[in-house]
Length: 307
Image (cartoon, rainbow, N blue to C red; front, side, top):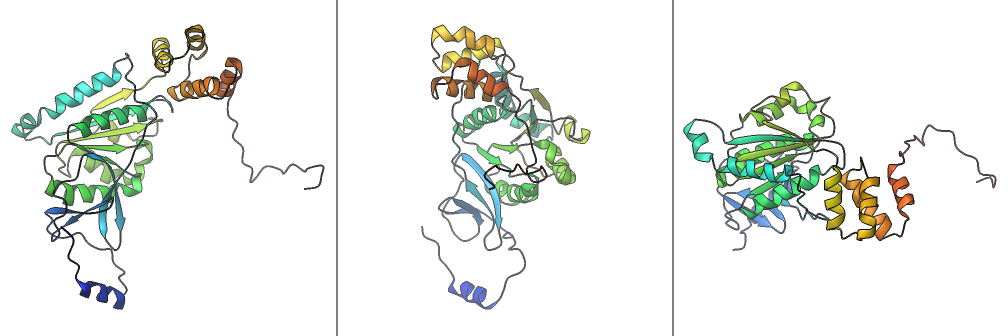
């Protein structure tokens, strides 16, 4: 059904400059969708339920808070036999099945999980696998766009999403949790469940747990802390077999890629089998430290040609 627009609204907007933020409707009951934007509404019935998928929450002074569908693509989602992913899937499935038990015990049905590890070890891939799993079960995944977006996101989920879809499973993704100290009070309330967001799993990631305040990490806020390690020998072998590396190269690559991350393994494969590097050149390219330099403060090199 098409939306019914009030022409007087546009006249008023033409005559007056709106300086204040557009407030959320006091009562919301349905969703309004315009292309890839989904917004809470009181008078337009276009969408009764947000479709399963991955979304971000944004704010615009003309439309207020809304969520935007993301078309997220991943190179590859592969389950290794190290079983970290499988165990996490089993734990989340167990959690979803305990909603009534949480209710009987007067508990908010929520769970907080922190994935920590070196960059490139596969935290994002693991989140993609978990997101795909919850979407197939009819759930919704929200990716928070950094700590500056947290307050808007909490307001949207609490005042709009949960009033329209009170029982839909939600996964909230908070990347780089170590950067959220500036919104500590809001984050603690969110993790504690004081915002009363039921049927909810928070998955946070970090490359640096040393700077995360202890208050973030205690149980009932972060309930499960999982270190994603560098790929072991077996995992590296499984990866190269999955990529159909020739048998004659397999063991050599497995042995020479010790201490490589999953991102490094991917680059190693690309260099050798797509870009025709030798194994030695590819290994050197990946393992050589990447020097950082401030070109704004370093002395300029003068060309002999005078340029």
